[in-house]
Length: 276
Image (cartoon, one colour):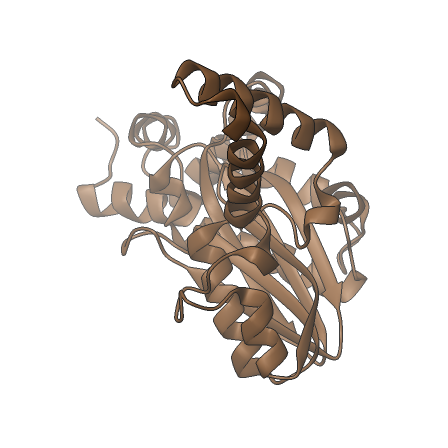
């Protein structure tokens, strides 16, 4: 029997993020030597990177930060919540996020292709981490906004996991406090667009068609259909358009009204939810 203890298994799992069975096999092969076991996990992990490419990544975290009128939002995904809350994965995500800020990346592809200080690309860093941790890890989305005022907000959907929702809000005028309030609103109410002009004509037409068919199915009078359809389409806008949503803190006012009263104009926003 290899010379190692339960404490050695725990230490190797924490330092590599690898699974229990893989850790035990590595320690057996390395005769309890931590460094050799780490190398074994890395070598075996690299062989399995290609096999992991098709796996689903539905866990992970988001990081959102804003400073000096610039906001950056990055989503880094993994396969299990065990890895998502591990120190190794969180440290990796922080490193990737710092690179996104430093390179002013605006997309995942751009970030992955960028070169770190040690000469490897972010994609190569992820491949090496995939090998050590034993899970598929990927940068799914990246957003960057610039404006006179930019606020960032992160929200935990579970107390034992890192932030699962991240938001950036860019405004012209007002101050950071109102922008942050709007960011918190966006986290809760998940609008899809800033203004109704951003909703495609095809989507609007489809909503009208559904609204009319539903009203007819409900037996509404023919003469009332146009008004009913218009009301339901407006309801769609209130649900999906940020500026038309009732503000979370003051539901009698729209987000647009709250911003107007604060002397602010919304320029853009970004919202990521892990796996969303």
